[in-house]
Structures are given as C-alpha cells and as structure tokens.
Length: 579
Image (cartoon, rainbow, N blue to C red; front, side, top):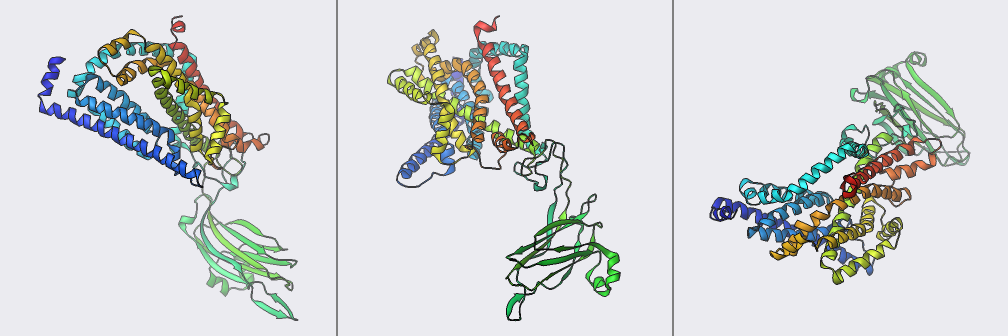
C-alpha cells in the first residue's frame, strides 16, 4: 500500500482525480452547510420578528427547520472529509462514503433542492469508485467490512427463516409499491370528485358527466318593465327560440350527448310563475317554416312547470352529431315584485368513468384511488419523520455520550423535559404553537417529539463503546474524534437504531393519522388516511366503506413495520439468535 501511494503521488492523471474528488467534496460541504445555516438564520430572524409582530416565516423555512440542523453539521463534516482527502488520508475515503450515503437519504426530505444535493453526493460516490481512487482505499475498507458482511448475511438468513418477518416485509413492500404506482393505477386523482357518485357502495359504476360547452347563459335577466293600472310590474322574458349543434368531440359512442338546463328564480315574492321548455330535432330555419302540428313529429322533449321553483335537469339526446332547436317561455299573473330569472343551457358529454370498486365518500371521492394516493402521503410522512429524528438524535446522542461532562448533562436534562409530556399531547401543542394545520406542521411536531428517544439510545450505546479496546487503539494512532465516532463507534451502534426506527415508523404512522383524525392534520380534501377516517366516522353505520378501507390500510402498514422491527430485534439479539 505504501509503495502504491508513493507511485500515485507522482502520477499526474491520478493525482488530478484525487484533487477533483477532494474539491467536489469540499464544495458540497460548503454548499450544504450554507443552505442549512441560511434556514437556521432565517427561522431565528423570523422568530425574533414574530415576537414583536404578526410575522410568519416562509413555508420552506418552517418545514425544513430540523433538517437544516442536520445539513449544517453534515456540511461541516463533508468539508473536513474533503480536506482529509486532499491529504490522501485513507480513512477519509470511507468516511466520505458514509457521509455521502447519509446525505443522499437526508436530501430526499428537503424538496426540489434536495435532488440537487443528492445528485452531487451521487457523483461524489461515483468518483470514490473510479479505478485509481478505489485502489487507494477500498481494499482496507473491504477488509474492515468482512466481519460486518458475514454478520449481515447470517442475519438475512435468519430473516428468511422467520415467517412473521417475511410477512411484515411483504406488507411493507406491498404498500410501498402501491405508493409508487399510484399515478398509473389509481383511476381518479387524489382530490378528484364525481359529485353525482357521492356515497356509492363498492362496485358501483360512475354516473359522472363532463360539461363540455355552454350553449346559453344569461344571468340576472331583467324583464322589460310595464305599467298597468298604476302598478309597476314586469313581463317575463319573451319567448326564447334558438338552435344548437352537437359536435363529434361532444359525444360518446355508447352513451350519446346530453343537455342540462338550469333555471333559477330570484326575489319572486308571492308571484306565481310557470314556464314551458321543449327541444326539437330540427334546425332553426326548418322549425320556423313548419306549423305546430308538423313540428310535433320532431319533438324530443317538452315540459311545463307550475309554481316558482328552481329547476336543474338533464336530457338525453338520441342522435350524436345533430342540430336541435330549444324553445323556452314563461307566463305569470300580474307581477307585484321585482324578480329575476337566470337561465343556463349546457351540453354534457357522458364520460365512461371507471367503476368505484371500493365505493365513494360523502362528496364523490373514489375510496380506492384515495387509498393509493394516501399511501404516498403517509409513507413519505412517516419515513421522513423517522429519518430526520434518527439523524438528529444520533448526532446529539453521540456527542453527549462521547464527550460526556456538561454536554451530556445538558442533553439528558433536555430529553427529560421532552419525556415529561405524552408524545401525542406534545405534538398537538407544537402544531397549535406553529399556527397552521398541515402535513408539514405534523412533520415538524413529530420530528421534535421523536428525536429524544434516539438521542438516549445512541448515548447509551456510545458510553458502552467508547471504552473498548478498538477505540483506545484508534486514539493511540492519532485518529480524530470525528473518525472515531463515524468510522468506529456509530457503525457499531447501528443495530439497535435499525430496530427502534423500524418499529417507530409504524408508531409515527399511527400518531400522524391520529393527529389528522382529531383535526390537526391537512385541510379537508387531502388524500390522507387519518383524515379519511375522520370524515367517514359519521357514516360508519350507513356507509362503512368510507372508514373501513383507510383503517385497514393503516392497520396493515403499521403491522408490517411492527412485525419487521420485532423480528429484527430478536435476530440481532445475541442471546436469542443462537437458540
């Protein structure tokens, strides 16, 4: 290895690759740290301004408050790793690999800009595995990873032998797959409504129609005033005769076109009004050339309505592409009030909407589609909360356990404050303090609520590991605290973290759904499982599918994570795995 390093230092081409890698790592570190610092500074600034007035921070600042702390620390670590790579420190390459993998995961929680950070981290990882760079560090890294790889393989073997863990993995993968394919499989959008299909049972066909063209719309029609016998009154609108044509793009081969007419009366008082409406299969010129008896042979529809009431009806037109004439007139007694008539005609195209295989909710939302879209929302919410909470808790707990003293004392007292309140109550208080009920607010509240658990867990593991011989050996050769923590101690505390995070994902899902259920979640209309149950609870006895299906989705997802977490805990426990 030493002779190889000496040769490479004199090779200009390979030296350039090391330089590019180092400066890219430094650039990424600076960029990530600056981004995290800007968000932290922005939240502090708006917090101070809010104390003296009604000032709310931009949504992005509030949403990524905890992520910004992680990004700031991670950026500084990436910067130091880049400097160490410049000095060709072999341990810096494996540290850079760990940090960039972690950066990839965190980047997925910070929106569009996170994709840019993820791309930079991915490029950095690719550069680490270019032939000349890989040859410098990978052999030692691989040798160090051999025991861990063997342990992982044996753990996977035990996983395959555990039917409950396999069942949990199948449930999780099934839900994740549904979330990914929702845009392709879901027959309706996440907030799409077919109002005509409200409360339809499972398996019901859709009766929705699309409005394609308004053929007449006259709002607030004021009849012409006349004076009879000294009393002001108004005649109804004169007879209305007009033609309209249904075009090819407004028809359905199987269901044909429809026409919808709406007539609304305003401020009628006690006046008695009636109207006559008819549709003929004729064009206007032909209609006017015929007498009433000849027109009757082409009559499609007619109705006479008595009494002042609003009307909204749909008529089926038998011919597809055709020209029609509609006739409308009103009659009334002497008019003593100043009333108005609103008239609207619309051509409807009856679309072949998919069936509602799991029924619809109270306003026509397709339950099956909303379950699929809800899988995206709830899984992304749960995984983001757990990932950020694990990251924050790991950083804080590792620092407290490794350095001890006042840092440890302060961290433990802060976690005691968080543990003094029930998690759900604390999350509700945070949501109320933030002032906006949304998914982002729930995310922040649960991240703040959950990180102390991981801080205590990691702190306990670090206290056990920091006095072991391999840590003393690393110190004796001059390894920095960062290298000891990230290359030696934290990798040996990962097993309990995985178990806790897996089981907490199901718990976070249930808590988030509970917050939505009691009104602390997203606004009405969002495809979120807890909100769906909240809206459907009042129809539980009459329309149970509104509540049962989202409830089953939550049950299966939480059960999957709990089965996997419980199984991994048994597999990773040295006392249980050898039985």
